Image (cartoon, rainbow over all chains, first blue to last red; front, side):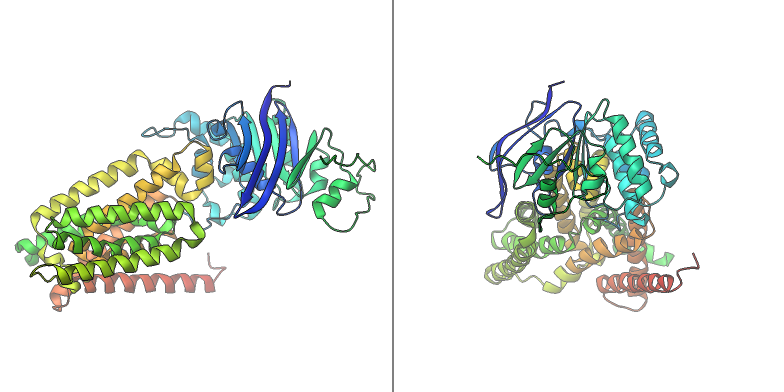
Length: 254
Length: 273
């Protein structure tokens, strides 16, 4: 199980001459369930977009499934962070999910029966099938987020990249979502971006902290240090909430 | 109204209106949902530089204008892809410089004076039959390209990042879309005028958008609205002896404000469903 899905070596990225990520090294193996934690502006979403080939690094290399990102991105199920970016757009729930069945160079060919059955299955999985003919813009943020998760699942991806998938989802559906993810993780590699330390800690297998640099932790225990980094304020008291009190070693700066 | 059809210029005007409505319905829908109204206005106005070039160098109108509009569209596509947050300024500059270039070239052009009014409001009543064939050809190209890439264009318009992740060639399609905007604008300017092009590109899709569940339906309804505005406008302009292009715009504009009013009244009664 050490077959790498993602291999990042010495990656640097800046935006308008402001450094966003520096000397990032990260390896995600097949079957991993990784959470990317970190403060707002720490570069989590940027890192995800680099791995999808939506942004190009200034320096360093990224390989996804052993190839440059972008070449293989259709094998990844992806949900963006914001779900109501285009609220007045006339598109039904079903059509939005079918978008996840697009392939490179599809041309004339229309969605087949197989595509539609896959869309139904994906929508049933997130309990949104009955909304299939509604316009996405009419749904609540949490409902729309579940549609986007269905869109990410509809093509049976080998990996899932989810950017804040639970940001506006209620507690019941947060738990449901992570149950679905846990089940999928038997065959699918998962990467979740989050700033919600609590939700993630009980479900993922490992954690990578992203704040310009990336520090990987091989288990999912949330440390005081991670919280401090995630919330970037005064030292955090680790009390209650079922969080473990064990403190990992300090990140080794080179 | 039927007696109007005895005149060839009226038959041509009606056909021109219908053919223009096909391009406006399809391309206008993309212009509205992709929020490139300003950019399309920029291409249309800058195309005036192409008219100037055509007259100054004695080129055929279509060659000069289309060539220049396509060039402007490519520049604008490149700029908007590279620097989105500054693109509106650059579009504004190209808009003004293109027009100024056109005006100066026409000043310098030997012994020919083009009426700016006919460029702004067109001359739908003097459309020659050959232009109808041009429009038919253009509509066919648009129908084919949009039909072929429909799902890709839908994904690009709704969620560009996701489209790219799925392997849709978003840059290529974006250039293709702006090229189609340029072609539509150029073909329609001489017939319905620059102002009418922008009005027909944006008003019908804007009204249609609120009532449509898909892009396809939005395009169809936009076509029907656009054709209706043109027919009603033409009839009123004949009946009351008014400038046809401007009358069509007034009809479209009136419906636009009625749709806003309807929407406003609906929002005042949230529980009436």
